[in-house]
Length: 365
Ligand SMILES: Cc1cc2nc3c(=O)[nH]c(=O)nc-3n(C[C@H](O)[C@H](O)[C@H](O)COP(=O)(O)OP(=O)(O)OC[C@H]3O[C@@H](n4cnc5c(N)ncnc54)[C@H](O)[C@@H]3O)c2cc1C
Image (spheres, rainbow, N blue to C red):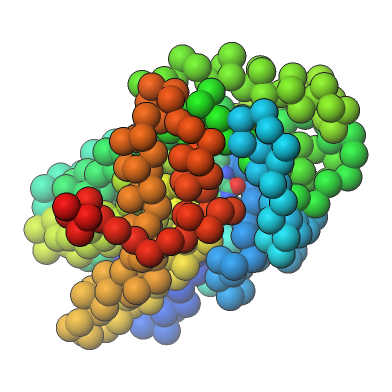
């Protein structure tokens, strides 16, 4: 099959890119097709489903898929009295409905979306081979295939630093409008969370991949700790998990022979390495990638370069800060479980020290 634009992955990044690319394609008579390995858009969900308001991405389909508002953040540092951060707002969304809504918009714009097909291989000159035997050559590819992107690998942009997570959903027994964060040496390389979603609570945690064996017992303990307060039930409605890229932004563009390649969302390493938030960045980068390819195929010479610059302008500073804070936590003993409470606070967005001017190791030397 010959295409103008092939979009790989229909999470928030791929679907957002497809909406823009398809709108243009209609006018220009170009063929845009999207390929997703999941059988159904947005299912299964691998997400805690919180979108902070400060990362508002314009016309995100947030309001229509919002389950409840969030107004505050409560941070527990080890077992001490928690700290309250007021004016921390956002939405708890129904992530499955959110992804499905974006895909519906892409299809309405004219993108051909195929589900249940997995990209198996990418040749050096950009030929894509899928699990159903389809072979596709496209003028341009958008790699929106998540943290372990095959498209990214093909152009030499790979997320090497990741956090592994495990999450359960349980019954929320008392209405709650805060995201609860648990900072502890029990969660090396990550943190624990309890996010309220209507009458459900998403409880989860992340750790360094080498500590993956801790996920199961640590999640059981966190659930038991929260259940003991009467805030949530002891029941488990379901489990999920997955990888979160935490190494910062990758080079988001490349060439495979004559084929132009752009990466968006997790594939481009845009998830915040401290908070793990990546939904808004996926939507924003997907839209920009769609726009850039439209301009590129229309003959605009700088379009690809501008895409990389736009990502740097939007996400560069916050990702660099978060990468630095992760490194500092590691240097202070995160992997050995020897962080002091002040170290834990300095590595979390609720505390002033997190935002202090960035000092790199080289500057300090
Ligand atoms: C447990 C957990 C909790 C999280 N909680 C939050 C949160 O509360 N808030 C937040 O903002 N972010 C959160 N994140 C991060 C957020 O989910 C991601 O940043 C976001 O999904 C990135 O969107 P994306 O479109 O780039 O990638 P994805 O959503 O991962 O979409 C990639 C798509 O590509 C498909 N795909 C992959 N490989 C192939 C292939 N070979 N062929 C075809 N299709 C393929 C996948 O099936 C998937 O649908 C969480 C992540 C995890 C793991």
